[in-house]
Length: 171
Image 1 (cartoon, rainbow, N blue to C red):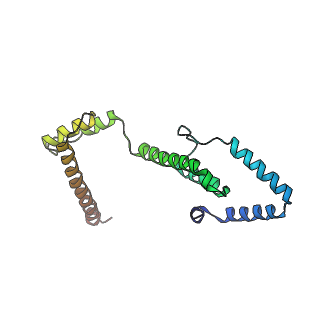
Image 2 (cartoon, one colour):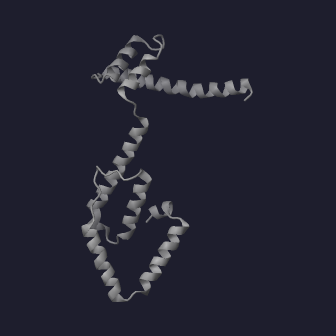
Image 3 (cartoon, rainbow, N blue to C red):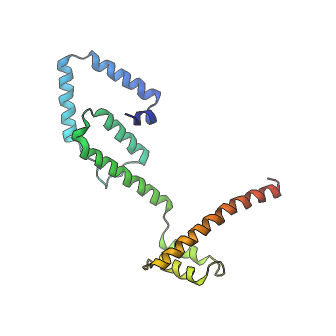
């Protein structure tokens, strides 16, 4: 599988070779018993649900990779694979939301620190609506997009001014 290229390291390759060698040295009866045992484990295995949050995103991807590598016939596992991918996607979104989210009270306090002369009245009203979770109309969304574009331009300019400031200060 192509995911092996991203996540394989030397220790895992060595373990995989040893496991394959041991499997090749088993008799046919022992191989059949192992397959039956594995089938029983899979049937008793609990499919991960949305509420389980056992680790970070990368650990979950590695678990999914291991589970996927142990499967030989994926057509019967389409539903399980869909559940895994859906859970990984939601876990990624949750981690992004945790990193990017602020409480409403923190947002209100940050909004109060902005001087009144920076924003026009229409932008102030739009931000007031947005912070207090009021309904935005089409013109509000238009002005927000327009403001977002101008803010991005200003932020790129700010980076250049920061570089010029470092040069002037000799750092």
